[in-house]
Each structure stands twice: as C-alpha cells, then as structure tokens.
Length: 494
Image (cartoon, rainbow, N blue to C red; front, side, top):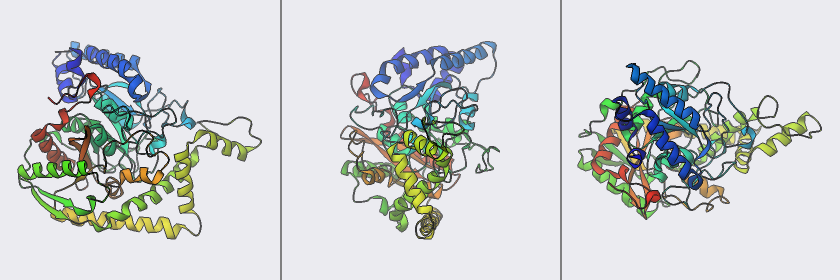
C-alpha cells in the first residue's frame, strides 16, 4: 500500500482522498515514514514539520467526515522551498544569517497552498538566498540527486526537486530567478513550472533579485503543476508587482490536442557546450511534438548570447540592494564582540553570508557604483529590453518555443564549486526567459547515461494554459515522467 502512494500524482492523491478511498492522515504518515528513511541520504529538507502535517491531514479527514467541501489539494503532501516565509516555522533562505529566523507572518503563496488543503511536510534546502545552480551553496549541507547520490540535484530549488523526484512529497514550491525551478526539475526528472512574472505573489518570498524572482511549482506531472498553479496564482494587493489577473484555467487545456500549434526552435539554444545526450533527447522530443501535429520551424533569437552576462550584472545589483537589510540590527545573525556599530555590521555580514552571496553582493555593488552604473547596469538593462523584444517578435510567428532546459545532465558534487563561471553557465538556457518575464516549463524527455534530461517550453506572458497544453500533450505521448530513480531497487519505467 505504501509504495502505491509514494509516486501517485498529486491530482490522483487528492481525488482518492476526496472519495475517502484513503485517508489524508494515512497519506501523510506514509510520506513522513519515507521522508524519515530517505532524508539522511538525500538531505532535501532543512526543517521538517511532521506534527503540522498530521494535524493538517486530520483536519482534511474531519471535514470530509462532516461532508464539508475541501480544497483541490486536500491531503496532498507538499514541501516548500526555505525562502518562502511560513508563520511560526523557521525560514533560513539556506543562510547562517537567518538560521534562527521564525517569521511572524505567512507568504501569500504558502497561505494559498495550505488553504487549498495541501499538507505541509517541511522546508526544503536551497543555495543560500537562491544564489546557485547546484544546492551546494547552502550554508547547512548539499542536497543529493535521487538518480545518483554522487551528483547535484541542480539549484537553487534543489531540495524541492529532489523531494518530489524521490517520492517524499507529491508537489513542492520553489522560486525561479534565473532558472532555479526549471534547471533542478530537469536534472531530477520532474516537471518545473516558472509562471509569468507577477502571476504568483512574491509577498513573503525572501528577495534575491526583485525584478526577476518568481514563485514556481515542482511536480510529478503537468496536471499536478497546473493544479498547484491554480491554487497559488492570482492578484495580491500585498505585492506591488502582482499582475491584476486571476488564476489561469490550465486544467481544461490539458486535453492533449496541439495540432496546428506553431512551435519555434531557436537555433542559439543549441550551443557548443550542449551535451550530446541532451541534444539527442531534446531533438527527439521536438520530433514527438511534430508528430502530434505541431508545425515546427527553426527561428533565431540573436541576443541570446548576451543574456547570461546581462543577468549576472542585473541580478547581483538587485541582490546588493536587497541584502543590505541584513545588518544585525532588527533580525538575523548579530555578531558579538563588536567595538562599534560599523564593526557590528561588518562582523555580522562576514559571519552570516557565505562565499557565493558575498561574491554576488560585491559584483552588484561594483556595477551600481559611481562611474560604472552606465557602463554595466544601464547597458545590461538595455540588453534585457532587446531580449524581451526578440521574444515578442518570435511570438508573432510562434505559439510556443522549444529548447533544452539545461546544457548538461546532473554533474558530480564538487565539480564546479571552485569554478563560478562554469557554475553560472548551468543557467545559460533558462536565464533569457527570466529576463523577459515569460512563463516556461521543463518536462522530462528521457534519460542520457541514466540521468534525466529536460525539455523547456516557453510561451508569451500569461499564456500558461497554452504552455501547459503543449507540455501535457508531450507528456501523454511519451510517458517519460514515469521513470523513477533507483532508490527502491531499480528504475521503474511503468
């Protein structure tokens, strides 16, 4: 019975709980036992909340017993990236500077997730302040990829991706600034959805780069991702960047019908560093979409090559500003033994921030400094505008674009820690979408060398229904999402 629940899609679990074929408490207990068994191997969670999970599950069962209506995610075990504030539950952002921070409020995205009936399993590991591509920059420990415990799960939402891939959680929230939902989803063989910027409230999301950060979904199937998105999306007056729209109706679009949709394949995304196995699997995926009736044509987005350098000016610049608040005064780590106020500031930040955060804060401060603002920051903003306009022009011809999600499969732990540039190149295929504020999804498209490969699909702003229609059609036609890591004695491809 237990094994039958680990990998059930969230929408199936919710339906079975609603029909009272299985209790929410039983589902929670099964997942908590699995978490207890596998967490020492994976280290996907910074904080677990078993008591809260069981209490939420009991509330679902009591409501069903009374005949009361329950939410669309009632009884679904869910995890949350540890940069989303949770009332009364420690929220660290993977940093020593917030190691003991317990928020006095709930983020909008998590509040909506719990209101939909999801069961809170805990807070997942991440690169410190979401700055990284491997979850090795966490101040606490690296997370391991369920497909190969010697490899990274991607980042920065690596804990969320690993938890879903390993059957610890049916769905999870992450955040995506430059690819931090899509890239780990690709490396762990699950679905990763980055919504249009502004579709999901950022209230309560600990800021990295405010013009880029977006709460996203990691799930086992496209339908699961659509279900969670519908629960958390929509306007929020607490977020000044929130789009004045309601949640998208994506579920009704998941009928597998894509005949006639125009699919663009940007040639710039098939770059020199693309692994041959990734190239082959993504090319095969595009052939599948063509066989379903999509009209496939190559296109060009010539400013793509400038996206990564522009991102690594803009994002650190915003991080430099956002992280100035961590000074040891109001909350967070405060160093002891300081001789004066300035010494306290310096010691607190030196002790609280890790190497990668310090690197990006220094990069951003330099880019914003007098004499360099025009040469770096302003120029990067102009490049961002050009990238966005190129996407707009592409979407005059195409309904959806298709690219690889990551240039490689999961790489070994420690391989890129000492080489920041090589690490930054992990996001070369996801960053352009973030700069343009577009919705994109990574879906599993097969294995290369026994490791998952992701197909990235991109759509115009607020076209999530169209995006997920294409992703679901591919998923239904291939079944790659059913492949499982060998944590339980072999890979299950049923």
